[in-house]
Image 1 (cartoon, rainbow, N blue to C red):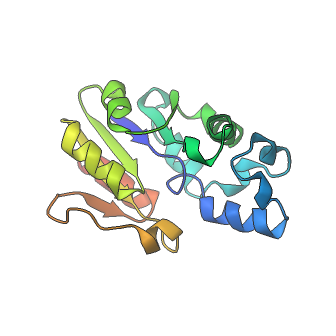
Image 2: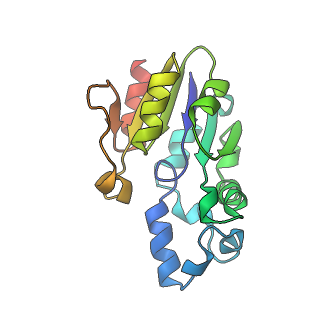
Length: 175
């Protein structure tokens, strides 16, 4: 089964990064690639990430991560450097950095069976609605800012919500 994973707030503790940036007076470097000269991205991977990724085949794992061009001209480079320097490239086959809709990238990355995991409900619903053969799952880490503030979309959709990668593994094993 193909795993298509978001990065921020699924594998990477974005909220802890923001707190560290504030503590170290580096907030002015948000979305600037130079931030990674001062802070190492691997320090912000959730504790369950490497055990989870290492339990699946590298060839089956793709990261599809969004950047937002409106936050700066270097946002794409910032995001790519964050992911590469986090150390997860040893565990994933492909990394797609994109702006806009994730559904076309998920569709292009899928084989017969796939699971897509994101913290942002709008992306999860979009993939659920547009990508047949893909199981869409929302991962809301406890205490993450997204978990506190995400807008619940169409509650009639049969989309699983998990809170960590162990819960996600259980879903994957059940498919």
